[in-house]
Every structure is written in structure tokens, then in C-alpha cells.
Image (cartoon, rainbow, N blue to C red; front, top):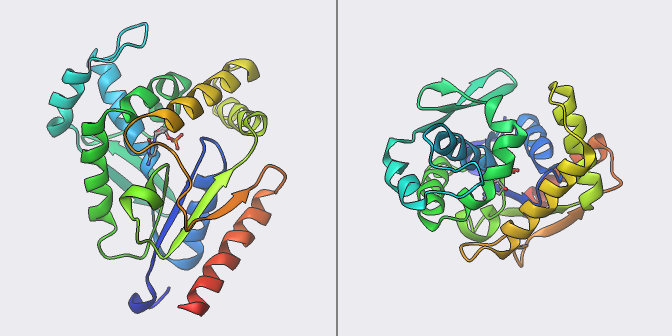
Length: 233
Ligand code: DC
């Protein structure tokens, strides 16, 4: 475990299914930091909205309804050994927030400025004591602009869709490559083009295209970067 005076903030941003979460989680484990998956928080708000009929069958979001509901939405993370679960108002929703149904509705929810402000505030509170690895879309640009270590991850849309299909199929969800690829591309478009904190690479982030890297190679790359930042600091 690192000494407290060595604790930094590590921000890992990038496209959906770019492998950033597994890489971030592994680094946090190796160096004894807390890991926060900020995407899970947007997914939990989306699940809440779906369950409370705040999203129509055609995907139209009742924005005012979602904003009004924000004070009633409490999100926590339950850490159990190596695994971490997202908890929505006391209920473990880890499995449900990963379904394609939630993935299909999350981008418009994440584009609502009031939702972003509420979640960014929670995320900043989680990073107060540093020693944290957080992944998402705006961690290095908005949540922690002063983070000591910033990474921006990318991989081709095809490769990301292939990884996502394998992940969903392993969980028993029957999905096709085409529908997942469509979801990946649609989310990229909305994430990059929304008015409120669009997905972009922070000027001081280190870019990683991991299209042709294995998971152990990515983990090693990230650990090397962390070690080089610590040795300079
Ligand atoms: O990383 P993910 O696929 O679980 O994220 C789900 C959605 O949440 C994604 O489409 C964009 C959004 N998101 C965001 O806008 N800002 C973040 N910091 C994290 C996720």
C-alpha cells in the first residue's frame, strides 16, 4: 500500500468499451487505491429513470422528471474483496446496469446538465482524500482537471464492439455484433457531441490506443506510466 503522502488522483477517460475500466480496476488493486467506475453512476440513474417510467418506449426522456428525481437517487459502491457492486437506493444493481437495455438509454441521461452536475459533485467528494483511480468520459477534463495522472483510451469501434459482445454473451445476454456495434457508434456520437462536457482528450492526458494490445500488456503499460509519474513527482 502506498504512503498517504504519495497518493495521487488517476483519471482514465475514453470511449465506451475501450478497456479502460478493467485496466483502471487492475491498477487500483495493484497500487492499493480506491477504484470508482463513474459510468456505473450514470447507468444507475438511467436504471432508476427506466423503472420510474421516465423514459418512453421510443427512448424519449422526461428530462424534468429525471431532474426532480435526483434528490431521491442515492448511489453507493459496495466493495467485497476484489469485486465491487453498484448500489442504487440500497439495492445491488450491478448486473442490471450492464444490460444492453440500460446501455441503449444511458447517453441521453448523461447529456442532462443537472444529472452531470449532481454526479460530478459526488465524484469530487469521493476523490477528496486522493488515492483514487476513476474512469469515465470527463474525469481528466471536468471532475479532476488537476489530476496528477491522466490517460485517454481508445480502440477501433469494431474492436470495442467485439469486446462488448464477448462480455455480454459471457453473462448470458443474447446479442448480435451488429446491434452492439450500432450501440457503440451511437454512444460515441452522443458522448462526443453533447453540449455539456463532451467526451474529449484532456490536453495533458497520455493517449493509449489499445486496439491490438492484450489485457496484461495494457495493465503493464498503465503501471509503467504510474511508476514514471511517481518517480518524477
Ligand atoms: O463507461 P460506460 O459505458 O459504463 O458509461 C456509460 C455511459 O455514461 C456512457 O455512454 C457515457 C456516460 N458517461 C459520462 O457521460 N461521463 C462519465 N464520466 C462516465 C460515463
